Image (cartoon, rainbow, N blue to C red):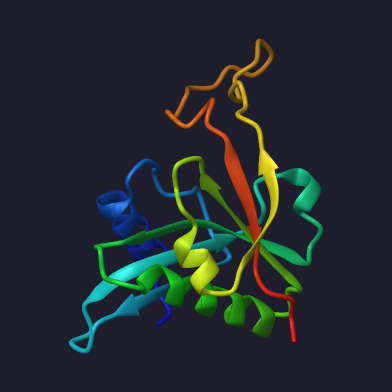
Length: 147
């Protein structure tokens, strides 16, 4: 189901384990139960890495669930179908070290790179606050090839 960005941000704020909602999104999708209660959301936006931001690539910047089984896999698949319908040719996301990626594998995604831990985003010319996710290795995933 489509989800308004403000509603997706509120859901992420309540349910995500270690991140705040991203600043914005190109689109958001959700999974609801039979009674229409929102159980999970995915926020999809421009890639955070500038080298991936080529106009044809989007990134799943956040997913969050209330624990509903298989909701993340459903959202990854729905996000990819929506991105393709909008004309995008590539969809990527990241997991942190310690996250299994089972939802991504369940949706047919594949690992394309391992990223070493980064020192953080802060530098003398542009100081930034740490969000608690610095110095953690990440895995870059890609949605199945467009068919």
